Image (cartoon, rainbow over all chains, first blue to last red; front, side, top):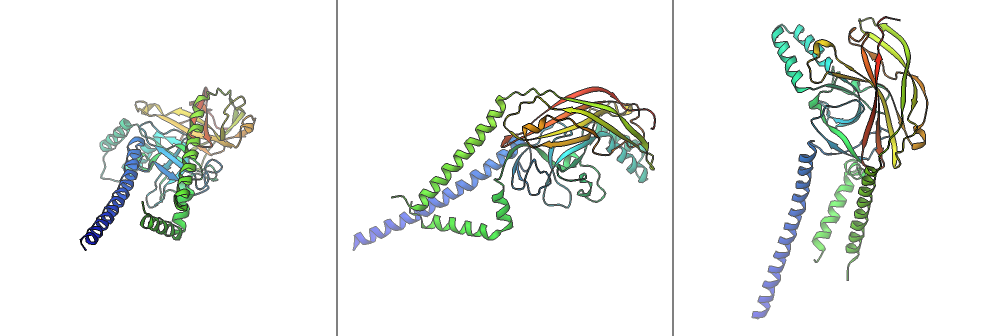
Length: 208
Length: 172
């Protein structure tokens, strides 16, 4: 009788070990993915280093389903570059080309604000302009290559220019078609669940 | 023996690895290529300079002789070409670090290498409106900027600056 109990115990401990190993390896996968993502964020300086092109507004340069790698540096943005930007009130970032930059415009806007609001004195206005001077920032206007007009219709109500904080990064690298995986998974969630289920089954049923 | 799932997994991993390696090699090979394209852009004349109802100036330029002829980008899929003008902001803002304005006048996308040699006669594609009347008689550079979009990998850009143009003083 003793040896049966021993073997049962050994099987039990083996199973517990197996489950533990699987849990640890799953944790390793998740954490290494997280580490890679965060490291990419550090290296590129952009809060989302990889984006998927979702619309055809940049055709024939970028098609739907292409992947772009972003980089955010201190260098000022120049006309002709492709930038990814966020608009207040829109969830999905947009990838478009810069067609116009204007350091003057902001001061025009500042002037209008200063005149409109009686609280701000002229001194304050100058102070603000000086602050802007030191940062060397510019205002940016974008347009999709495939669109007819510029992006002012896409921007938030009354917004004429993009400022630095709207911009997530400029596109530096390009990988075609790979983004279709993401697009299919977000548009047809059933496929995502089937995939996750199948992988889970594989993990559970696999012996080694 | 190995199960079907195990083999399928190995095959998929191998295929993806090979694809990634090929993409990386294609991207690296782009760096070995040092193209020296010859280009030419000329401003033929100004079509008109008008005063808008709100007091802003609007310019219309004719750009001419546009030739990106002898470029040797071999492995590209597309080439985006942009012509923009650059000018320094007005004198009272001269102390600013970043007083450069850039306005895109014309752009186009060349789908293949063969399309890169062309000659067009065109006016500015986008409306060119001054906020006020600061720009009359101002000097500017024309910049031909091209952005290479490779089939995969790192994108790169280059430009040629042509200085010495001047905006007109008078309405016409």
